[in-house]
Amino acid sequence: MKRIALLFVLGIGAAPGQDPVGIDFPNDVLPHLTRLGCNAGSCHGSATGQKGFKLSLLGYDAAWDYAAITRELRGRRVDLAEPEKSLLLRKPTRQLKHGGGRAMAEDSEAHRVIVDWLRAGAPFRSARPVELARIVAEPGKVTAQYTDGSTRDVTRLALRTSNDDAIADPDGTVKAPGETSIMVRYGGQVAAVVAGRPFGPKVEVSDRRNLVDDYINDKLSRYGLRPLPPCDDETFLRRATLDAIGTLPTPDEILAFNGDRDALVDRLLDRAESADYWSGLWARVLRATEPSARQWVRTRYSRPYDETIQRLLVGEPYLYLAIGDPKQLAEFVGQSLLGARWMCAQCHNHPFERFSRRDYFGVASFFARVRVRDGRVELEPRGELDLDGKEILPPFGSSPDRREDLAKWVTQSDAFARAAANRVWAILMGRGLVEPVDDLRTSNPATHPELLEALAREFRKDFSIRNLAGLVMKSAAYARNSGKGDAFYAARMWKPLDGEVLTNAVSRATRQQLPYDRVISGETLARTLHLMNSPEIDALLAPDTVENLYLRTLSRRPTAEERAHWTGTGDEYRKDLFWALLNSKEFGTNH
Image (cartoon, rainbow, N blue to C red; front, side, top):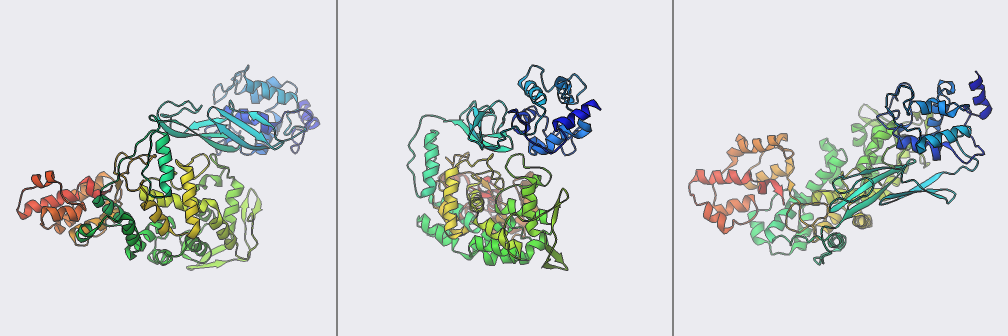
């Protein structure tokens, strides 16, 4: 009872207040608990906590953690009369049984700070409370900047994780040529720092066709990487045709190509097949799975993308028929439209980004009054989401239909243009400037951030997916010879044809329609075996000349060595050659 009375005298258990001593819980104690892993997902930061003691994940909710430590168990976790005997210290130092083992030494800085805090009365805030404004990360150093203008070196307390341990350690020590980023977390703030070193001396890279190459070439030069030369015309024609319309060029188109690559790109992107193919790609992004929904996306393809998304969020019913839950709709907005994965924020603040549970429910609240009944989408006059017993309202806007406010905010945000630009780049180049393409965040920076911003600026001029694709396809980076392929784009990446494109390619090569089969989706053993043994494909094979078979399948003429090798003349021999070409890596990839 004596200790409980002392808690009330010192204000423990009351609402967080101020203390005349310059030490507080959020800025001094909590960072040490986070650094020690006490609030990690594998310990007390898990959804259910450990042994009845739960903390917020990585300390995102300081007030919650303060209450858990100072109020729960009637304050037994802290001992203000004899701080060293507090459970908060005796457990992690293993003076008492502790499931997490010995997490803290008695002579450590963490132990000293917590003892000083307890001796000061365990205040939530000091007499001059300040908030953490931001963190600045540099190789080997992390600085916290506070709202009063003060700074603090928090390198020893920050959580640092390398995105590629083979290139750099979390402390910024570079071990091998290349580049990676190091994610830095401290006090609920997230930053990233780039670490790497060149492969060799700086080189001159002069092959430029448009603004894309300014950024790609600069990085190649700084990292001492010489790009591969441009591909030949037949390779470019095949590559551009597959990327623009999702199938192969015909032999007549191959023989007629005059080498004007920019004109070719424009012709391909202006064909109706291009709108069919690219609207199909975007239908996957926009969750348009039903035929009527895919047709709606097709009719909107030539319209500005921002207008399409505004129509989708406000007036198009298919989205709500496919995704009826407000929280899932919020996740769709984040992942599909803004390139942000918000799912984990339904239960706790995002561990890798500044996005809280309140932010998550705030976005979901824009859809709280949408109802789907008997295949119809209706708007209710009332109805709110609940978070911890409190109604959550949209953080902005006053329109009768809240979705209008959200649609305007989404399409005017920088993230919207960046996410679309990153997807277009990934479709054409085989990997995004940010990977995964739907995970754009501070702690997962782009390989070429200035290029991503430049592409986003170009996209915002007209919000045309077609024009942005044309810009990338007319660059020197797009036209390089194929090679290993990496994040520097010194070589073109070999891209496996997806199931629909491969089906189209086989149909174009055989001049007969091959029914689509899901088994050929993805570069898998099942796909390889199916193509090799499919009776449907075998039935489509017909003999032709060696040159025509190469033109029909690989979109090029055979080399002199290939002509000398394929000398058979019988129909079965030519059909076997046809089968071999259809099963080659060169046919099954865009390179």
